[in-house]
Length: 334
Ligand SMILES: [Mg+2]
Image 1 (tube, rainbow, N blue to C red):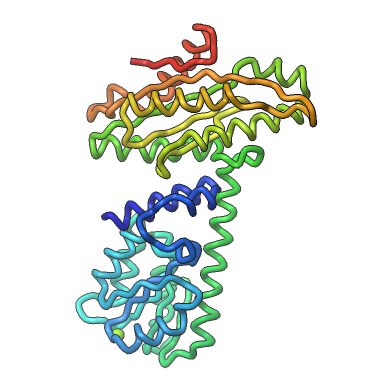
Image 2: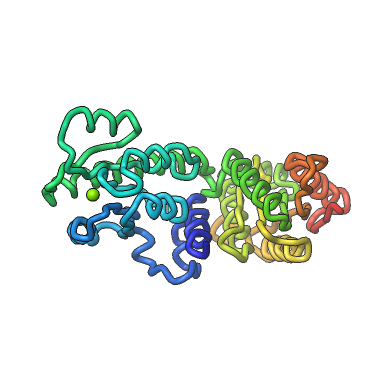
């Protein structure tokens, strides 16, 4: 589970577009370079095949191996590899049964599978594709063909990820966008509810930003938004914390497994960092900005009396309380 959590953390960093942020965090001992390699899981009951495939692929990918179907399912769930190379003829559970199980599971459904097999007839090949295989490699395999077929699949998955990242990233600030925010929030809310642990949400809004824009122009305003986004990221403490641009000058931070005192500290810290920051107007001039923040922390109740929508609404209300109380402060919703 430690491994799984580590990968999840890493992916959460990568997903919101900040590779360097992720690289410099301690994510539990995976070397920085290895994290940039795609992960390939090899599954074969014959050690010799595993050794040969590892040898062919190890310079380009991080390789994991399993020798049976159950091992494949467990590792696929834990590590979410980018690609699985799957033998068909295996004792206990054959490759067809394994791919059927992978496709049934939400966590592993989208991992592409290449069958590596000595079965060499059109019917088996067809069956593999019907069950959702991405490609086929025949045994005895040529290392050039294996490399190319793996490379094709990895290219496809990397492109899909890039497109997905673009669709969830705010282009100006490079934080997650509103869509990203809601998908992450729902995921973390469900996890907190399942594990009965606290979750905190901070809503942040730049004070009198319209006035700033009217005074200095939208180009300078956009630069200020980028600065605030960076300051927010700087104020986060853990790689699992999630920042997003929620709307125009409004931002949100999801703090999983964080109770009120921790969330309040993070919010106060971000407010202070913004207050101290000099926002560039031109070569000689800078200006000041402040933000108002609203915080709500809760252990999601098991009954449905309080939903994730209530959490958003409460944090938002707290932010407006901070505005009403004179701005440049943190308010908490009990
Ligand atoms: Mg076999």
